[in-house]
Image (tube, rainbow, N blue to C red; front, side, top):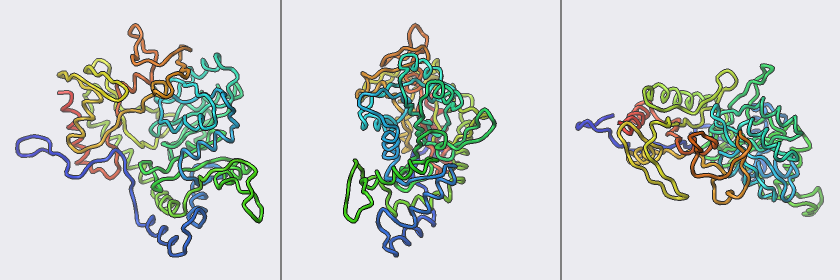
Length: 420
């Protein structure tokens, strides 16, 4: 961990935030597809992968697509979003959660987060319906593999007659226990559901995603739309708009092999979370939270939140950031820059959508029922913008499941030096 002068050594090989983890099965499924010449958007790998995914998540159908974003887009298409229709969306998330609403010419309204899970706040959602009682669709993301408060959110949606589009891109393998004591996998609880198999996710095909549903009709529509909406005719007949969104049989071979190792990937990620939890004791920080009685995350990324009193001064613009170091204190920028010096990769927390330049003119609802885009997360020392506060004080730690315990111990020591 330390060199002869007592300093922490730089990693010879880069420690990634999260990178693909391959096994022998992926190679064999891809080679089989090549040997049999199924190098297309049809083939055995796709068929078997769809069965595996639906069976694991607990839905009747899974449709393998080119990306999680394409799955979300087709969710919006199924939801029938119309031009200028308001749609409630998780605020603190990746842009791919929200952009498909705009693809269908809808108008996102952003709902603030809560501290217990960092996900969409049910109280803010209720407030949003007071402002927009006509809203029919709520787009919900499970952040970093931690399930949202689904009982409360679903109750609010039932009250107002809205359906949920569940963005479980980061949450494959995570589970939620409902009020009846029944466990549900993320990706099975919405009316329309999407999962990602991007290269940094808990399982990957190098790319890819899935639409998940219990409706045969919806699954068939998504299959049709994802292959350019071709009709059953002797020629290429198109009677509605389609897309080139189908997954490749080669990509499916990689994801099929990766799926066989999902449980061990989750266990490896959980050990990483637990080692950070133990190793960072005594520092003024907390890890991304979850309700241990109601949910079991997939621990995709371990994240850190610095206590307010332990934050050194940090100022962020749209593309640049400055901080002033202070003894006993730190900030996300200092930690991320220090990790980078040692050849380890971290990442800022998702910047909330209402703070993004493209979406700054869209409405943003907090638990108080009001809110606008702000760079300052505080009003009279009272937090009214939870997502902005978490973004200001939080960061994602190196969470690659190929990281050794010794390497993680060095990362923990690097983080500790930032507060000394």
